[in-house]
View 1 (cartoon, rainbow, N blue to C red):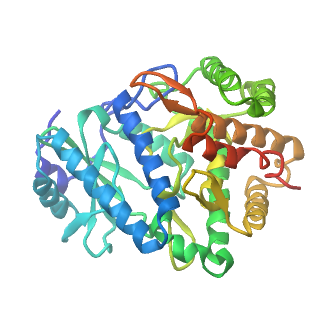
View 2 (view 1 turned 180 degrees about the horizontal axis):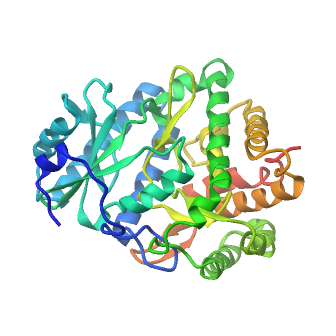
Length: 402
């Protein structure tokens, strides 16, 4: 149903269940078309390469802003039903003050906030192929209530769907690197502690996700297990042989993530620096953004993302960790155990968490597109393999300390 955008802006409402499509679920079809997924992976790698090649924070910020400007141009060249000016005008009506584009944009959306960054909301425009399932987002929000911004549907402008999203404030980690790295990463200590509590929320609220309405999209555990197993076998055969012992170990341990007791939780598929927002004065995580591509996943499979904020990339793709990254990692796991609860976070529990973390690391970083429809393991000598190797070999057995 197409609603008048101005009237909708004056009377926000939730939309009916599944009226905007379904979230991405492995084996059940994609919420985003393949070219868009390819473009998202390109953007993620482009941002990482910028952070590794920029010699100073000012250069990095300019590079990210230039990428965002290109993404805005591309968005409106592909979505001609409404102009950028029309979107800006509607966003100003919704927010109630002058607006400007957010510094970090996405491939499949256009996002606007108050010009002085003092508003309580951002407005996002998405085409029909990439519309949000607001009812499902409400279920995800109940799992990550302290970190996920609230989303509301505001009708359409031309062919674009319009959303009002709670403003999380702060800066993306990309724009807060200078503050987070200063004084031996003093503020980063607060960031890693908050991330530990973010991951723990999924454990404590796992029943809210498991008991979501039957009409909500969900993944059959057996199907997901088979999908993970197939991909890990691809990696075992396709990655350089030095990875084989680790990947084969993960294959042998994979049933622990699908034994009927270990929960499936909402799995943020792009939990990297541009989607983690922090207060640059304190290091506190103010919110996690971009939940569009959420899937079901075993608890713990996104924890590998911690490493994304414990260092920067070199020009070759290898991660260069901060000198005190081991101390930051120890702090994360101490906060994680505390947030989970000492009676639950036994050594056996933490061992399964580490299996999940490693599985997520390899599945999320072990493949590249070779065409619009096929993936292959990352190749020897590639930027992507250097990144995977620096994040895995030598760290897998030392990340969780007692």
